[in-house]
Length: 554
Image (cartoon, rainbow, N blue to C red; front, top):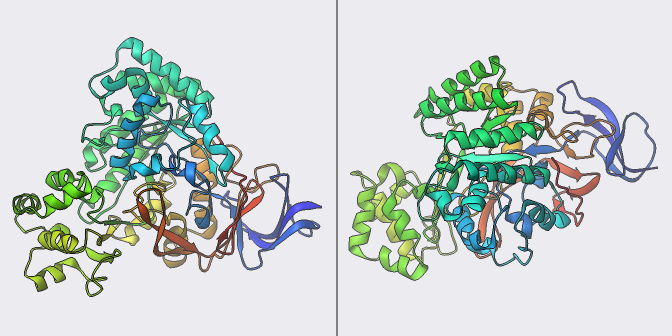
């Protein structure tokens, strides 16, 4: 008798071929058989009218901290995601000396908008310094698989201390970084992440940005020696020319060291309609040379929400706003009520009084948001009040204890008729969900459901089988995760059962589970019936189970 039999589903194995009506049997956490009349199971799941597919793999997340207080990595599982890759953008939580913890927490706070309490209130487990210790700390409570990257900024900080944000490394320091990276890879890191754009809590470049090419080249040598591990990069995505130069640089590193590389994000926008096609053309040229440079694209536009209770990346281009909103709450309220400070903040927004930037915002909610404003455009409200849009944002916030949330919806990816063919490009890697980050502002999850609803059902840019392959076997192959991404006897039983006619991302919902910050916005999925990780049901019929079968996998 099998442990579990999933009966009568359309089995889509992840390799792109037509789905077949069959049963799938699981034994001891692995797929035991696929076929007709397989026999009985201790547990039976009826998949009639449903798709049975490999669990989806999310290659760009920041669940590093969340996994210590939420081993289910909510809401990933309810979107059919069974494996996540944290540690992106040069940031991980190891290797990390005790003396440098506050520095790294500040980086996560600035870059990923995580409140400091997310790193302290529930971190009784923070007993590690090395990478093996971090993996040991998260693994016992995992309901999801984790394939963690190690951050370049953490490698530099460990070796160089404060000088990691001041200068290039010496030859001896580079050798020490190579040794440290090698140990992290042997302690189950799946690769290295770096960033060319991010800044810390004080607005200074993160350590990885001080690395000269010789340092990155030396670290990629280690990635090659340790089995051809991944290099993940955040390039200067706001400039197509610089991004193309980074593609060329990554291609050279890939060819020299025999490694895969990936970069994100790539956005398509009416404002820069030629940027993404140019970048993808250069990627194709480099693949023709034999390089592996995988661009990551999201399926969906970005929704950014913020209130003046917390700093936000939406305001990152406005230095006076950033300075004010980084102050302690009482000082922030005083500054926002100071006429001179308010005038300087409004001047920061340009001669239109912030109409272009703030006028399109929608008042989203918040515990004290005026009911008459919720759901309306801020520009319209400002005109009724006789104020500029930026002035209205400040005034409405101050009038309501700063607890008013504003939403900037549908940033980038303006035209799905352009996005679908780009995503279908076999050289484009679907990723960059940013799960676990931007807890109070970005509604980050929903790539998987959006892929099926918009680009399978609505536009037909993908068949069902092609879409499944894109986020399962393709991702596993790109990252070298050998035991995941396919439904085949002998492989780990990571399985998602879903309704192809209804799977989609839902509208966002507020949840109050983040230490300190409390509120975050997440998107649930519809159409996902059951999710199994390593042969155990972790999510079914809209509810999480108590099973904790997740593992560190690389």
